[in-house]
Structure formats: structure tokens, C-alpha cells
Length: 239
Image 1 (tube, helix red, strand yellow):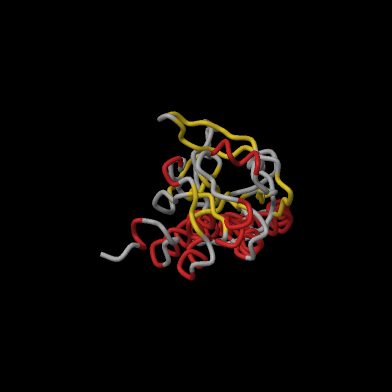
Image 2 (spheres, one colour):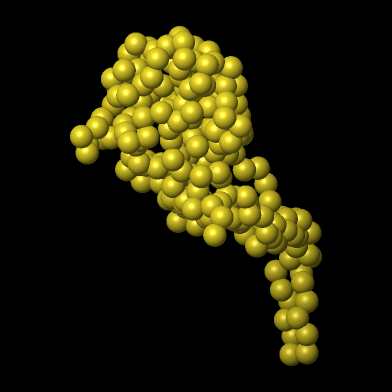
């Protein structure tokens, strides 16, 4: 397809025809390679994230399989089972407690032991993995007490509002209960039986290469939690 002399190299007619045919494909390939390099260098594209509603990101009320369902990133509350996912801790451990209003306690009596919950009206977080199984530390060991909720709701804000109104006993993260505690509308119960605190985590599949978009989103979450730590965390306490 090339005609060579001692002084020059020229395309033959067949070579020129071949070049006309393959040039567009070659240009497209170069463009595709340049596009891939750009995607690898800068965050772009669609990023699928799942989070529990307690973070006020109401996306799904169940724990999804990130790989099978095509999610890039999840925000979860630990501890996690050994799932093979990569974990990035976003917050200090957060306490979880049981709360009720003074008016409720006047009507129904005090709660002195987790087993007393069986005789009380309870509010449950409907999107939790085990909404009727409440964790405690009893006699120095982790224990689960099963409650029979009269109401199940998938919003901590609504759970707090109902508990503040004196409807039932609620289990809440401290950051959600803090406004009611500060105003005297809620009282924390069973403090000596409180379960271990839990951290907020970012988890993602263990792919060999993390995409720029996923890395950028994790950095955003880290910065947000550093600037606005949840109530009850070590970083939010006055020094």
C-alpha cells in the first residue's frame, strides 16, 4: 500500500482508499481513549448511594447488596457483619438510648430494667434490620430484649415527636433525642443498660480501583461529619 523510491514514500491508490476507510475508526478510538483518561482523572458520571433514614437521606429502608444491586456506596451504622466491603469510618461512636416523656412515665410508671419493656407501649423504627429486638448490656453481657411495638415508623423525627408527646417509649440515637432532653420533654431511661455506641460508616465494594466519583463523594461525607459531628459524639462535646 506504499510506493517507495530512494527519495520518497507515497501511498498507493489502494493505500489511500484504506486510509480513508480506517481514519474515522482510528479517530474514534483516540477519542474514546481520551474520554477514559478524563473519567479516570476527574469525578464524573452517576453514583448510586444507599443510606439509612436516620441520616435524613431517605433512599431505602433496607440493607441492600451493593454489588448485586449496582450501588457504589452505602452509609450504614456499625458494627457490620464480615461482608468483604471496604469500610471508612465517618463519625465517632454514637450512643443509643431509650427515652420517654415525663407525662408518659407519670401515667405508666418507671422503667427499671430492660425486661420491664414488656409491660410498656413502645415505638419501633420500622426500617431497622430487627426493629423489635432492642440491644442492651445486662449483667455485663450483650443481650437482646424483644418488644411488641404499638407503632412502627421509618422516621426518627416522627418517633421523637411521638415520644415527646407522651405517646410511647422510644429507642433513639442520642443526636435525635438531644433536643427533647435539653427541653425537658424527654428523659433517658435504662442508662446503666445502654448498648455500646455505634459509628456511622461509609462502605463500598472492594473493587481494585476506586472511581474518582466515589472517592470524591466519600471525601464530601468525611468533611461534612468533621464540620458537623452528630450530637453526642466526642467531637461535638465542649472542650
